[in-house]
Length: 406
Image 1 (cartoon, rainbow, N blue to C red):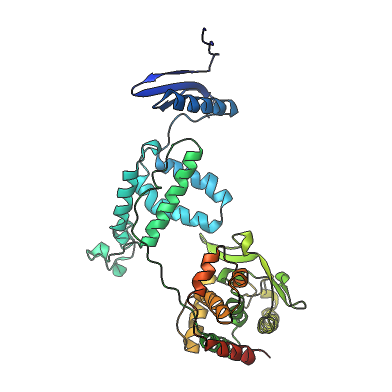
Image 2 (image 1 turned 180 degrees about the vertical axis):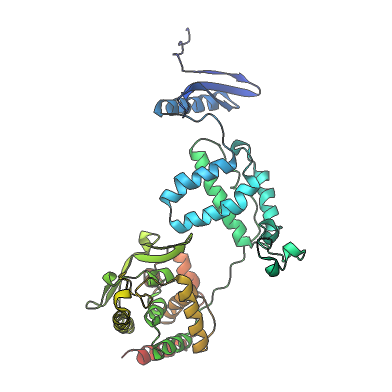
């Protein structure tokens, strides 16, 4: 039976080296017509690629040259990550790409990137002082240079966690390259990484939490209500600073968590929380309700004192002129309050973790705690529940409520 004659522009499949190849006439982005080739070990593999290429050619312009890793990652950041993912995610990926991926792998052609290339690259990052590699010390003024630029390497090596995050950024970019049919396998998927040791998280006892809050309330600290919301309701720092009065119902004693305040890439952003799972309406216990009522009075007094200099933002926590709170300034105030209260130094996020620990002390069911803390995974909640403090803290927590309520 005679074979069907191919239509004009359909292309051809033919033996090539140790396998087969095929081509299809395509229109390039510049409007010119040319052949684009696909390759494979068997005729069946090439035929599938050939059909897919035909579909691409019918759908629109097709790029015929394979980009370098640097070119692709740059486009991926601009066209995929920035428009569709959270600003902080984009800032993180952009930093990893600029400092590590493009300098180390950027010149490699994308389809020739191999597992070994990625493995050696990551090994080199792990073993290289980043102060030397990035010229951090050399960029300082002569009087401030103290390590690499003066021949005294400071051994500024990245952590195992950072190595894993860098690999994660590259793997995400290469997954997109697979989706666009630029490569067939992700060479970053199977690299061997050193074990990343996670920092052991801390939490206050109920007695320490009480002392911290009592100190803030006694000094009429403008962040007292924020500290209460973090410790009692488990708010994240950005969620507390992004809270608006529109989301606080003092009459119904409810608060809705749906916004956050973040410093990203030099900009202070008031934006929606990262996921829908982070959005929730919570009842306000008496201690939280009283703290927010106090905060409203404090803000009204600040507004009267500022006069025409006041800038209305609708935020619960503001400067004395009504502008948003810089997250770093909040952290500094939090650290200063720790010193004044004479309690153990823990991070703001660990203070949120304290909420989970105290809920565990009160025998609150883990699923309920997961809803309050808005964890994405139950395992995160259970990690806290397996490290609860002693039973004696339950009495202290009751004293906390009694001492702060009213």
